[in-house]
Image 1 (tube, protein in one colour):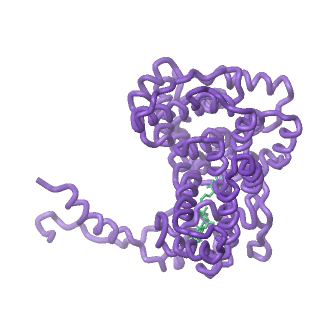
Image 2 (cartoon, helix red, strand yellow; image 1 turned 180 degrees about the horizontal axis):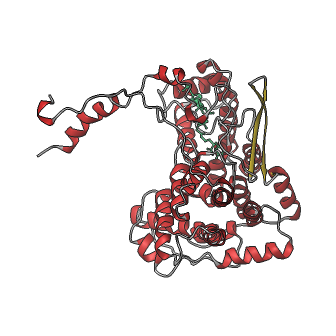
Image 3 (cartoon, rainbow, N blue to C red; image 1 turned 90 degrees about the horizontal axis):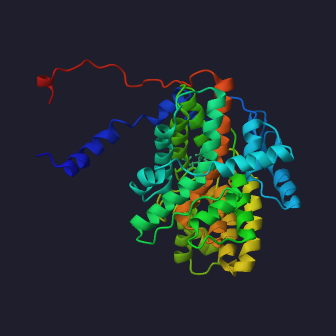
Length: 450
Ligand SMILES: CC(=O)SCCNC(=O)CCNC(=O)[C@H](O)C(C)(C)COP(=O)(O)OP(=O)(O)OC[C@H]1O[C@@H](n2cnc3c(N)ncnc32)[C@H](O)[C@@H]1OP(=O)(O)O
Ligand SMILES: O=C([O-])CC(=O)C(=O)O
């Protein structure tokens, strides 16, 4: 009998060899690798009115770095946050409304929308037992994607891509994501980690952030400060233009005319990746690794040496990446990281975690210097949204397996808005070109092969 492992040992080398394309071809055929232009800007593949990510200007085809700005439907996110904080209100629901419908709700519209979301949080009958508890996963993003795909079978009208039906599915998904994540987490915690099982029914009278904390805590307790911070994080993660990998996946999959669940499941798979939303989890692992190996957290040289090792693929996960640093669009700063850093500083003072926070500050300051030295690169890197989010969640006592799923609970709003925009305005299957560089070979009959 064929030994599968031996087969894989041998054939993985063959697969690797036969899938390696000469790097020079990419230059020769002017391939826009990663859909980037030669100056590092993104290739223009679409138009959107939902989100605007501003990280540089172009002067004579050169990128000129600027402080980052983020707009939802044309409104500066910092202003949205400021406005909400001034009123002392939770704001994630308002942001969902803004993203989906393109304008801010008035008081009655907001009240109705908040009530609607609250009433739609419960999963369909039998869903929790059959789709979540019977098939727990060690990974909540994987569980979430499966829950989204399973939703197809519980929908009486899954394939109808009229805007009314897609909007119905979108609002249901925005309302149900926190429940799917909370139950997926409880199932993992029980079946994989042998803890007690807590299935708290969602509460319709709570805001999204409050309800999520209510559902994941065994005693249902949370403070106003905790809920406000989670709400802020949800607002900041809700949308990021059409080009970010998960949202682009929504555009690509939607452009085929397929159902909502297929498009959203693809986005979840994308967001899970460590170069995208999964980075918030890797940042935590990386910081633990730095804490373990750097003896003096105030010694810049020692920290720099360790960061160099990370870039040289000699430390942490050997990917060569300093997680939470760098962005495809932002250069000097990511406005969300700036806001989260401020919150992290306020919380760290209360929680007595200032030493650890100082280490984050050091890594944030030193990583760009090490990057510039090691890569001989003029590319500006700075802390992105994932750099401080995990640290904030840690101070809120949120379990690590929930960090990337919380990103998804927020970004589903942007994904749905972009799906609707693609259906209304895209209207063309997305199909870029891949040039074949294999050349042509004759088919060799089986008996003549060596
Ligand atoms: C929500 C979000 O998705 S925010 C991003 C979260 N991701 C991370 O934090 C992971 C770390 N960062 C990264 O991997 C990158 O900065 C990305 C993927 C976010 C953006 O990448 P881009 O700006 O498109 O840069 P690109 O992928 O072209 O990289 C250019 C070079 O810089 C390197 N580089 C970019 N960021 C980093 C980093 N944080 N650490 C080390 N090297 C980096 C790349 O490895 C590449 O090196 P190479 O030319 O030797 O191959
Ligand atoms: O825009 C990107 O490339 C990544 C992203 O989604 C974000 O930063 O929120």
